[in-house]
Structures are given as structure tokens and as C-alpha cells.
Image (cartoon, rainbow, N blue to C red):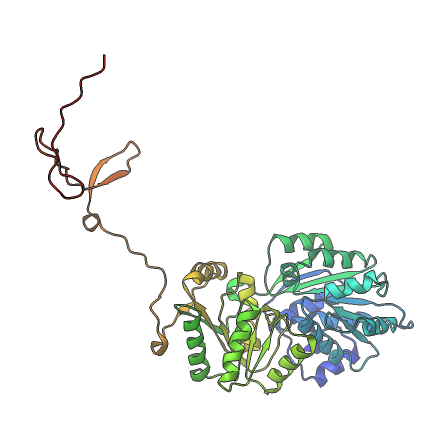
Length: 441
């Protein structure tokens, strides 16, 4: 029960209003430590309730502030606009019975309007690193009184090249008392480096090992001959699988637009989401998907983080993601909060090695699936070793190291008889042999 946590009564009232009863494992592990003011580094699978795990302790720190609102007290950094907008909604939901105000700073919105909002000084500021730095450089953002920083999806921020931006923003908060870092993957050396720079003697909480991520999702691969064949498989899946909502992931904006165009031509209710879309279109696409106005979203990895849509039970990787962490975040869109989902990856010849490396990273083996109606010729790399007899080789003695040497059998070439006429290269009469010239003295 959430009542077991030492949360302010106004926050517990909001929790009850939202019908939160039992905390998830990540909430049960992180909230008590966060309430003690500890720095945290938390790894937990997507859809496990990480947002509430940091929002509630953060709000609890601010709820009893008596002084007039003149400084930003909490900063939440996130990699994408969509995740930032979703986090703002969560903060507003949990703070509905308090006087805490939150603000949002992301790209794609009017810079001057954001500056005006900053002059009102929200208690909690939520944003993406790039636009926050722009406001900081313009003199509109002051962070010296920030008490708590949250880095959500920190590994993704590193993948997107925000490492220096995040570090600078953290350095702009010299008086912070607590830093919490959350992600769905363990990340690599870059993340460990960031942890060493921004966290002080953190408590490490790993709620899921990599091999346990997305346990509620069936993971399948289907081999394909080429992109056109992949498109046929996508059409078959959308027509024959049982799903409420689906996402098709591509690695490029061009391919996302191409697939979206084919779906619309076949009267599917679909939207496309990628970096070339302006903020208005991106908001519309996500809202339509959430409300059921569209059943299918075609997207690049801009949608792989922070997209929480009820009823999303089918993910199709048209292109295999470029890393194991990105794969985890893509398929994490389905099978959330204990529900079941299906993730299907389409594999051509050039995708096989990448797929195998992701299997090794996850310590899992994906289910191989064949659809007879759209079966192609490619079925994975062939491992055929020719026998010695078939290859026309014979064994020879071993070398000094004991390795066997093999040589191919060859028919001996016949040596011409001394007086035999030579055949001409043009197939005409045989040439006569000439007597050798006398040696020079």
C-alpha cells in the first residue's frame, strides 16, 4: 500500500484519487530510499512505474515549502519531447492537491513563450537538454537553487549526444541535495562515466537484469528476401494478427514515410512519427493513437522512449534496431504493466548478424516464425561444410603442430614427346619444331 510510505497527506490523497493501490517493485524499492534523500541509480524495465518512483519523492520534498516561489527547486531532464510531456502530466496529476507548479521546456515550442513561463518560476522544471541550454545561454534560466535533479532515460540522452549538455546542466545546480538517475537499460561506459560525475555515493537498484526485460512479450523473427518482401509480411501481420494498436519501427524517416503511404493507400487508420514532423503533428499522432483514432503508428526511434499507450500489443521492427538497448526500448512499448504483447522483427541477409548480437546481449533466443502465405527464399545463413570426398581432397601427413594438411587432387599433365608436333593456337595445321639456335660464344 502507498500509505506505507512517509508521503505527505496531500500526495497520498492524489494517489488514492488516481486509484494507485499497490506500488510496483521499482516504486517499492526506490521511494523509501529517495525519501531519505539518497542519490539513486535505478534500472527497471519500461512500463514498470519508474515515473511515479521519482515524482512522488520529489514532490514530497517541495510540498511544505513556505517561502514565496522565487526559484526553481527541481529539474527533470529527459531525452525526447514526448517523454517530457508525459512526465509533466504525471507531475500535475500527483500534485493536484498541492500548490506546486510545473513547467515544460522542449524544442518545437515558441522560445519567447517559454522564456515568459520561466519568469513565473515554476517549482519543477521538466525539459530536454538542448532547449534548456538555449534558455540558459540566453540568460532566461537560473538553476542555482535547484535541490533535486532527475535524469530519466539517461542512457538514451547519451545515445543522442547529450552527455556534455547534461553534465553542464548538473554543474549549474551546485546546491543540489539529491540526484536520481533512472533508465530501462544498464548502458555502457558512457553511462558509468556520467554516474561517477553527477551522483554521490549512489544506491544502485537493478530491478531487472537485461535477460528479464520484456518478459511479458513474445519475441519472434521472420526472415525476408528484401524490403518489398518485408512490406508484404507487414501487410499480412496487420491483416491477420489480433491487436488493438500497433507500432511499426524503421531506422529511417524515408522508410517510415514509404510504409505510412502504403498503409494509407490501403485504407488503414495510421499516423507517422519521426524527427521531420513538427511538434503539432507529433502531438496529434500520439493523441490519435491513445484515443483510438488510429490503430497503427509508423515511427523511427523518436517514439521508442516515453510513449505509453494503453492497448499497444503489437510491435513490428521493419528494420532491426542498431543496438540491444534500443531493441529493449522498442519492444518495451508493448507488454507493459503485466500485459502480454508480441514483437516481430523482420530479418534480411544484412540484418542477421545484428539480430544475433542482440540475442547475445539479451541472453535470449528469439522464436523463429515462418508464414507460409508470404514465405521467401532466405531463411538465414547456411552452414554447410563439404566432406573431404565431396570436395575432391585427400589427407596428407600432419605438420609439426599436428594440423592436417589437405591438397586438391590433380590429374598429371602429359609432357609432350620430344619430336611431337606442336598444335597451333588457332586450330590450324600443326607447327613444325624448330632446331635450337646455337649458343652465343
